[in-house]
Length: 139
Image (cartoon, rainbow, N blue to C red; front, side):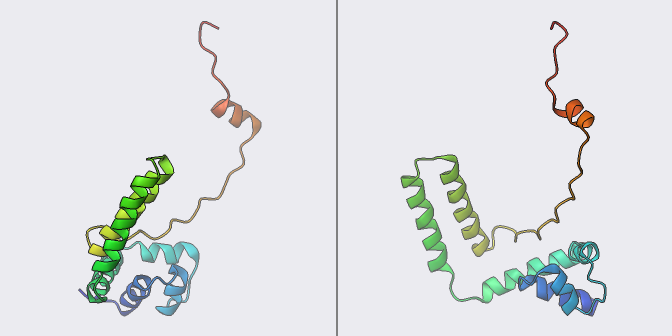
């Protein structure tokens, strides 16, 4: 499904090519590339679906991925044997398996990075109210 709007289609093509969202907005012809507006464009349901579709098509067109998937599975099995199931080891194994599933087309593509929220400095009173130990009624 090709998007009706030429700019949205160009945006989806650039995002599928792993171009940062603000740069993709510029390449799609949007004059205002402010972070909030560019991010809002990338989160449109039709654009997200189109990006996923383009990435799936590229994965299918790519050379045979079987050796890559086999290597990831072997690395996960090797890591499972050597890392003794520590939390870090299990996270590494899970990452390898998710990447193998993504290459097979079974896992959805990763979502665009969320912008961090600006930090707000708490007053001492707010901090004490939020984080100070609460004394029980019997104390």
